Length: 281
Image 1 (cartoon, rainbow, N blue to C red):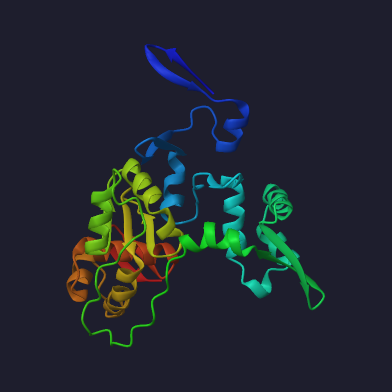
Image 2: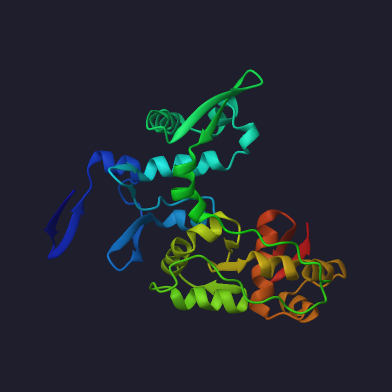
């Protein structure tokens, strides 16, 4: 790529290969989101909603391992492979979740011995080598908490600790989300930046998000959603429809209730009859 001057501004020339990889075309709206102090991420604006809902992943930086390395693309294949249960990681099952390029990268990982194959019950299975798993995947695992035996009416659990770039440019948003359990963002730039910072938490289901018809972005922690969605559904079952009244019935801040309602609408459990008026689907 080359930087050049155009109309007294600096512009970047994208090669055909880069354009294809990014999926951008002429007149597409794009933006740059700060990843850390020295790096920005390039994203199409219409992909922000997918990012915030966890349907779009962003590759992690290249990870070095001595003289060897695992590329961004290979790391994503390893992560996808890791989503399949060990005993079900057959050639057929894995082929169903990988595209052609990812399948090629898998063969590459086998050659590197980052992924091994073995036979069991006449089926060939894949396993990620222990060294690669411990170094590149285990450190990204979010420890599962044991089920809380307290009743729903027990003390409020402590605030959620989210995995993200807490010291980055969106740290104040993340701290609000950790403290309150929900967050409302007004712009795509804010939503994109926060989603990138919380990419790991979104991928692991600790954070949920959606974009509503009012063009605002609603983000909640899984803990907040699980604690309060039952009360909101119960309020709607009583025939309460307006967001303000549902929030009062559920003893929640209005924006917090609205965030859960938007997520319920996205999942098909509720529908928005008109602005700020919801019923069960």
